[in-house]
Image (cartoon, rainbow over all chains, first blue to last red):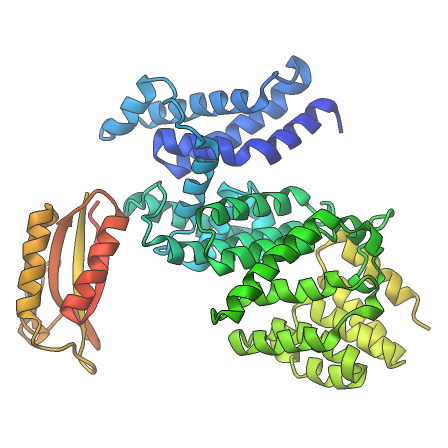
Length: 410
Length: 107
């Protein structure tokens, strides 16, 4: 990759949401903001290799995108839209203090608006804030590209037609609006943690970092919201293990085989501190939500200096609590992994097999089965399960790990 | 920005019939807040007539254009700056009317 190409990639990671957010504020239209931002980045791809990378790529992109937006508005000649005409004739409005973060938060609350369907909120946030392409989002949610495109187009059209506002929700609406945002941010985090593109790095830490940064911002706004704290703790404790998660040759390393000395001790300590804060609240009678329980599970894992020191009965007790709150098959699958440690792979396999109907298309289901079958010495069946898991896994590092495991079978 | 605010009733599970005083009070507040443009309760769907004059001659048929368990029981037109304002008011309206509310922007 040339320097200019690298600069465009980096600018896309760093500046996409900022450009979209700034343009949305200026032109009051997500569609125009997205298209103009995409055109500005395309222009950067064309011009930066020959003309050089501008000293302030973010400002260059915002200015270029603004020009593209004005060109489009002129082209469309929207005489009925006096507001936009007015926006065209004046310079960029001055940003209020702290406006960078606030703009992106505003963008998030708009994309996560409750008047939009949940799947539209996720798609829109990943496109507008995360800067993922439509094919990447489609792949993350196992739908066709055209379907995802339509979902995003329809959501933007509703925001415009129904005039969903571009601003922070009022104080009394905030808690409800936040839980919708958290669901979306966790999905973004997961996409970063287990990136699904066939040619992308196994871990896109730009996405995990972005999800953490935005969750921190929301925590600063709502320090007493237990689920915000829980989600932040959960993300930090997962992120802390990132240095040990991918081997030198790009293979994903499962928790049991990770070099625990490579974990980020500062992130672990911060995550544990937040979990303790929520445990104190739970002791005072505040029932924990799912993110707080998931964070507690990860706190148990990150407290063990060696996999053999893991307090699996504590992990299982927490999963039992979680199943009562969220009886989804994916939670049941993860619970079965703890069962395998306590009661053996045979008991766990019986639980996992019962999830076949719901999870047949989910790579982790087959990977879990493959591992349990391997531990039971049922190599032929294990191989078939690895084959299926490899077929379904979208993550390059995971595919490499599963392939090695399969090829080690007797 | 104007929104059509529809009150949806359910034939198999109708809302309570004693809501008039509460609705009147709510309308007063809508007027005071500058949101109220129009409001009206509707007669039963049995009283509806569908007119179709797209062909040779006008055809009149008894009943609503679509038979359904849920039906339009009344409408408001509100003037509001954005959907958040409307959704807040609509949440109150749903309580006041003891019925579901659909919010739809005018073009």
